[in-house]
Each structure stands twice: as C-alpha cells, then as structure tokens.
Length: 426
Image (cartoon, rainbow, N blue to C red; front, side):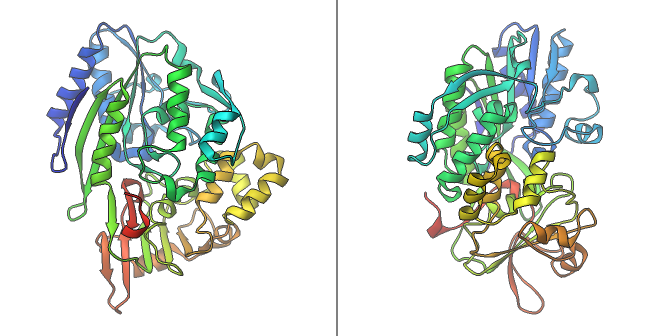
C-alpha cells in the first residue's frame, strides 16, 4: 500500500503527483491502461487532476490510455463537464461512455441464498455480475480512482462499488440498491461493512479476480470557515486494506455528530454537481439522521432540471413519487416496470422522509413547482428561499437568522454525513 494521511494533513499538488507516480512505477511495465474515474458529480474527489497526472505520465512513455468515467446510471458527460473535471490536456477521444443498460457483459451469478443471508430473508433473488465489456480488452492495468466518503447505499463509497456499479450493469445496480433499501438506510450510512459492501466485494473477488485492478482512493475534507477542500488522505494498492484504512479516516473527518437535532436544515446543491433529484437527494440521505421529528429540510436546487438521470427512471419517479417504504414496496409488487428497475424503487424509498419530517425543494427555472409537488415534495421558488437563506452568507453549521429562527446549513451534502449522536451507530 502507498499512503499518506492524517486528520490534519493537507496533501499538496507536488506531494500528490509523487504519490501517483510512485503507484504507477510499482505497477511494472505497462502497454495498455484503463482508468476508471468518477464523473463530474464527484468533482471534489480530486479524481480529475489525478486522472490527468496518470494520463500525462503514461502517454509520455508510449502507453495507450483509455478513460471510462464510471457513470453508473448518470447521464454521459458533456464536453464542458469533461473539461471542468479533467482539464484541457486530455484529448476528448480518450474518454469513453459507459452504457449501463447495453454495453455490459455478465461474468457470473450470485445466488439467492447469499442475498437472503445478506438481507435477513427480505430478498432472495439472484444477481448478475455485469460490468462494462471494456474491462476485458486486455489491459495490463485497470486504475480505479475515487473518493471514500459516507454513502447511502453501500455505507462508504468507492472501492469495489466503482467497478460493479460505476462501471456496472443494470442487474447488479438495481438489485444492490434494493438490497440497501430493505436493509435500511440508517443502518448503512457511514459503515465500512454492510450487506451491500459484502455483495460488491464478493462479486469482484469471485468473478473479476482475473482483472489487474489497482485502487487510488482519496479522503477529502472541506474547511467550513474558508470553504477550501483539503486532501486528508491518499491510499493506493490492490488489497482491501487500502479501502478499510481510507474508511477509518473518512469516518473521522467526514461524519459530523451533533449534540442536538436541528428543527430546520437548509442544504445548497451546487449547480455544477446537482441537476436531478437522483443526485440532489443526497440532501435527504446525508441529513436524515440529524433532523428532528416534525422538522423541515429545505433544499436549495437552482439547477434542478429532472428527477432521474435515465429516461426510464425519471418516468418512474414521476409516476410513483417519494411516497415512503410501505407504498413503494406495494408498487413494486403491482407494477412490472418498477419491479424491473429496483434501483429506482430503492431511490424512492431512500428519498422519502417516511413522513417524519417535511422536504421542501426549491428549484430554479428547470422544473415547475407543480412538478416538484407531483413527486411528493413540498416546493418553493429558489429565488424566494435563497433570498431568505442566502448561500453566499450562511456558514456551515448552526445559524441564527435576523428574526431569531435557528437553522443548520450545509453547503454540499456530498461531502459527508450529519447525524444526531444518539442516532448514529459508532
């Protein structure tokens, strides 16, 4: 393992470059390399600059380098998004597009007995281990790059998730997300070990063991006074310890435990990262263990333009809405299309407060207030709510408004997890 880390560490660009190049040197002689970085929705991961460093180093040595952003179910990246994430130096034809529905190959089946064991008997379906067929194009090295941070489906993001979800196919994406939903989001958030993590690790170790995969994992923390991002950790290697060590640091720097439950939480969704509720509902996931009963979550979403990033998922969200677990499970039984898109069903469950607190989305001009209300949220105009809760003025954490109202503000929900101490499993 190659690593540099610490809760007060701030890895600088020259240090990062040295760590990246050391990782590449340890990989031996290379002729063809596939890089699997996240897309622009993980802009703060530093995976973009790392990818650029790798591309620069390897192509200078005559290595063929392909880059497959691990979109999962997200929209393909635009040229502007590619440049924002990865810079100007990499030729656009180096970037390939992952098609999670069509451009995948199945390498094995995980039987229902294992799923029953992982879910405590709640599901017993088989799971097809599907990944993008590019992974089998005789690469000497597959370099998986990304950030370890609390995650609503698997507990902590990245590692094997980047392979079987980021570059995965519909069966494992849908069924793993539904496994997470029936296991209970509050039981998974911020946990290194989870039923979904065990599924992902088993899939890679059992069916993809012939691939030469090296992981480069970062742990990032925002300084909420200056809003600067700091790289607290860099970990690289092939073994599970790379991920587990990164999780220890991420749990220390990315989880904020509160002594009391705020009645009102205000979350801002950066327009560059969040244009759908599929992504923007991180505001719901990452705060749900902090908000008091009968409280309110206000989501400032100036760039909201759709619900799902996939046309089928968008249609299903519009059809069924965020209506809570019992109703969603009933719809799964009754509706074949939803049953065939269990990832969408899982998302509907995760995005509901289960009636415990109100969720008010505040969009710009991309969707109407009636559209927002039609999927089960309350709605208010962005300009009106941003006038009261100005993201340029508010500080992360507790704020007291001029009229005495107290709110808890979060400038980017993707950067961590917020929870009332008594609700979080240490």
